[in-house]
Length: 264
Image 1 (cartoon, rainbow, N blue to C red):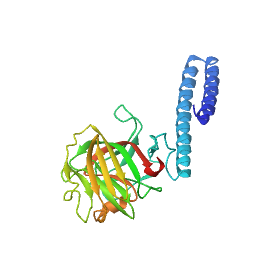
Image 2: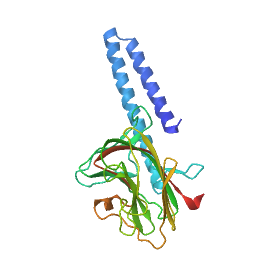
Image 3: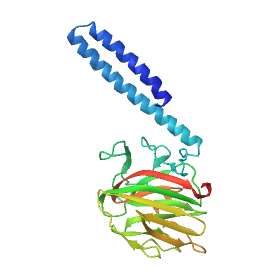
Image 4: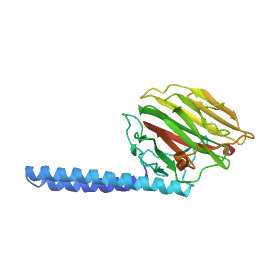
């Protein structure tokens, strides 16, 4: 158990015991009221503990350039499961709400992006690598008719977006390569994204190549040597340096991670 939680749990236990001792010496009616107050106190202390631990996680992440400590395989979590620490909701205008659900549909926590008039999403506020890195996450379509994930990411001195389910719900690819969008360049493919299903996504960026996987299928294998890499002009530029968006679609995201390839 976290040391902070141990201390606060001990204080909670002491307070609860005192409340029950007082209740036992009172009338039945007073005892019920005392127990009710004790339960409210427990709930408040539990919320306090969660808040303190969340701030500790946020401070630790900030001290590490906005990233959690790496695991044995080099992956660093970008989502603490409790809050949007390290992220902020991207303001597009007419965008849907962004929130954390600690228990999403009975499972692990997720960041939920509600459907907006056009783009909705959130972007990273810390430092990120410019090349030689990988990003992985899971995404689920909740409702809507267009892309469930627009992952905007750095590529050297520029940026690009991996689009999953665009142009009416089926296009996947990179926007943009030599000024051509994901719907009209060599990365263009078509995939189906049913509602309520989690999809594993992984992106790799190196100076020579962009690669991406959907589940275990490699959907992007693009040589970028000598090519112009850029974002599609428009509001998506607000997602830099690293952002996750939807378009007229509500979706959920979890297990957002990053690792530097030169650290392996």
